[in-house]
Length: 351
Image (cartoon, rainbow, N blue to C red; front, side, top):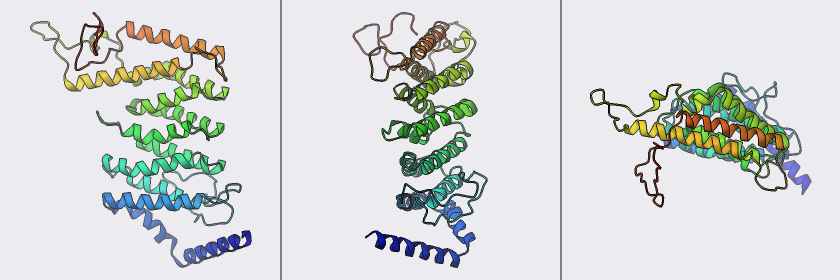
């Protein structure tokens, strides 16, 4: 059976080489670059089939190397060009995975965000699955491709009331949640999160929720290295990017309710102001939860180093100061009550 399988694979490879030799490679490239002209339904179907082919290619012999990688051994850059066909007998093939990155790059900026969310749903799940592949080169290729695409996607600020960033960044979270992911892969995900925060914190909106979930998971990781890296990212976020996170203002007057100039009475917040204030509060709560996840409160199989817990406690002191200075205000509820037994309970002076 093994000989028959090898013969069938060799025949498949020979057929692929024959087709590749007969078809101009420029025309092959055009198949993918022309995907921008497809309809909304057409591009979704195209992506679905490309993902299916990629899954079939990657399901090769994971004990060997990978084929279909450019001469430099890295992933295709946004401005670069893939020069190899990816057909070989060395192991899992990533030709279609590379092409998937290209198609995403071509279509990202020209497709409406609603259409893009449909495209990315299947594509993102595929990247998350490949990112946990047992072949290290395959999984690292997928995560590096995710990193490149994420940088491009996050260059544009997210509009109010949209959650496209959270959808786009979800594959990183899925990889961290996967119990089969390797330590080096989880570390790579955290490095990607750190790089994105360093460069694009000013454009992050709903994406913060994914990053806080990832950092919270790092606190319970069996690897001490992952725990330390997760808290280090939180520390840097506090030191350098707190204003971008919660859209904070240095002036208390700037965050108070608007006042009527004639009566000097506070005016109700507009719908947009309420949503912005609630979003800021949600992000701040997510940050607090991420830090508290590093505080050891119970006995565990993999206890946190005492130094990490003490540093996380220092974070909570910073958060208390921020709240006391009214640099972050509580969310505005549609219904608020002074009765502690009712939902929407607001004690005197909270708002």
